[in-house]
Amino acid sequence: MKDYLKPLLELKPDRVILHIGTNDLKSKEPKQVADAIVDLARQVENSSDAEVVISELVCRRDQFNEAVKEVNKQLRKYCNQNQWNRIQHTNLTEKELNKGGLHLNIEGNNKLFQNFKTSLIN
Image 1: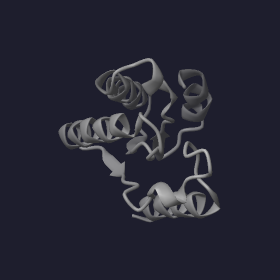
Image 2: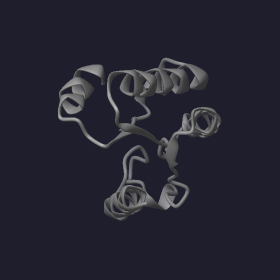
Image 3: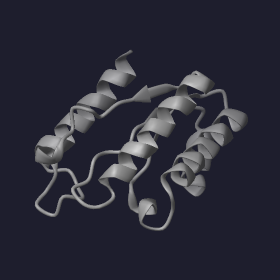
Image 4: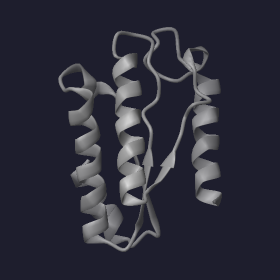
């Protein structure tokens, strides 16, 4: 992620939204994943004037869904502590996942897009 952020920050955006996938949950504990997201957010803050916005993780339909919920709980706490805005995806449920249950279907993508759009408008 750091390699992708640097060129973006050189463009001097007003807002950087960090939307992270869930694959790290296969090898890391939820708190480690949340801490890594927060570390990345702090790097953005320290290297630019951009507002940091954290996008919660999206649900899964497998054994890692509880870990997703725990990461989101940690992210809520960190966002409150650091006064970062947070994009919630509570409107995304298992019915917005594809057949495999790990990715969003078209309806899920539309809802995710709407969540981002709403956040950017506010």
